[in-house]
Image (cartoon, rainbow, N blue to C red; front, side):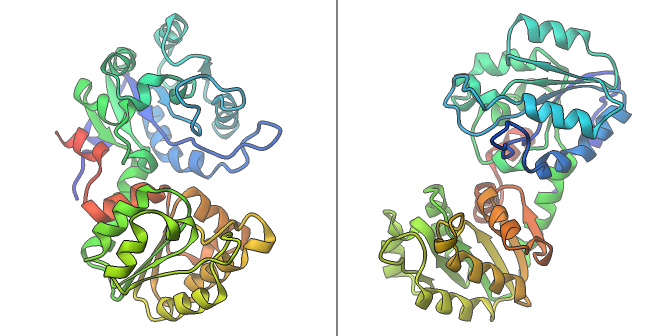
Amino acid sequence: MLLPNVKDLEIGHKRVLLRTDYDVPLSSGGRVADETRIEESLPTVNYLLQQKAKVIILSHLDRPGGKPVSGLSLKPVMERLTTMLDKIKIAFSQEVLGEKTKELAGELKEGQILVLENLRFEPGEEANDSQFALGLAALAEVYINDAFAVAHRPHASMIGLPPLLPSAFGFDFLEEIKVLSQVRENPKRPVVVVLGGVKRGKINAAKKLTPWADFILVGGDLIEYDGIPAMVDRHERILGNLTKKGEDITMETVEKFKEVIFKAGTIIWSGPMGAFEEEKFARGTKEIAQAIAASQAYSVVGGGDTEAALTKFGLTDQIDYISSGGGAMLAYLADGSLPAIEAIKK
């Protein structure tokens, strides 16, 4: 898929809204615990700075529900970004929209950055409120989307902004689409999709992926959600059973999954098999992760919890590609596009 590239736009000396995905884990002390997603944004950030753009960063953190929540400010992210770009002046606005934000945006000089507060502190973000989008657009002259992980969300910063400003995608977003397009259009078969976790949105993706995938293996709480049992009845390739406590998959299921995984040509994995954070419930996720890492298949893994499991078990370097977003990854593989892509293409 050929998409509008940040390099296609005239951005020099202009104020640029850059939508990043800085939904990073914070430590108990309020510091960034994993800076991977910040690092992934740096190629685009540095390009904009090199072009002498005035960069206004938009992002979210967790799910505060449209109101300010203590402990979910993006200020720790701004502070970490400052250490990573030690020669760049970076300001922080304690609000998303308002007089202070307008003032700081107006004061930005070429090659400087302004980070706005958590977008999801504002109800207009998730509601895709047109007035909220207009307020954001008024701060800048160009919009760049480099937040693949939320590209399946119909939020203001995803689909409300592109009609209002010249728009394109950042380098990390483009790399995601390049890899996933190749997997979707020309996978090595058999294709095995491994689904777990708790997010119900994966059910719709699973239904759409059924004709494309050769096997779909379901673990985690998804096994018991409405829609999944019916799919199991209609589709023999969907498997999975939970232990009596429901915190992990059974060892019988692990062996069934491993048998399929070792025959795979391509593996897509999103979502842990159980509550892997607790050692007594980690075995299912660990054994499936080890099987995927040891297989000869081309492996693509997506989602924060899944990546956290790989990190815990020391397997990240044995996966071919780690996508920043599990839900967005599955949605793209299922539909061949995403709401954020369609918003900019139009």
